[in-house]
Image 1: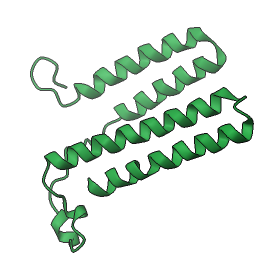
Image 2: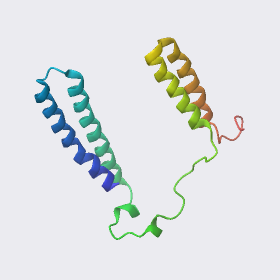
Image 3: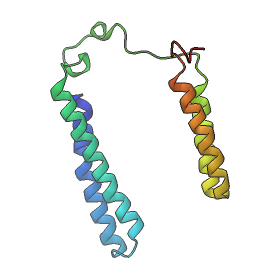
Image 4: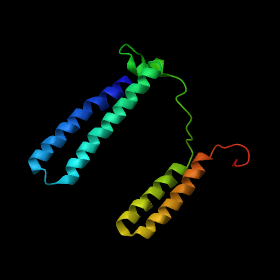
Length: 133
């Protein structure tokens, strides 16, 4: 986590500097880009702070050891569903929502309903008991 937190922490002043330079070049007359760059600096700083706080609470990972070997990272990395179609359905729902933002607001409702159904399907994919497949 240390590498990731340093990456985001060092990017925050960069985006802050870019926002200031952009503001001076545009004469502070283009507010959308300036606000967007300042918000990007804030977002990157928040992510860096979160990763640094998480790195203090957990043990060091093999990626954080400069002398680490590839074998140290072997083993189970998490639970993934390799044959799941639900992420594709969620992506399709998000695409429909963004299409609705461009084409018509009534399409957004269809996309939101489709996305909620896909999200519920993904969450309960491995559920046991009453909602098992």
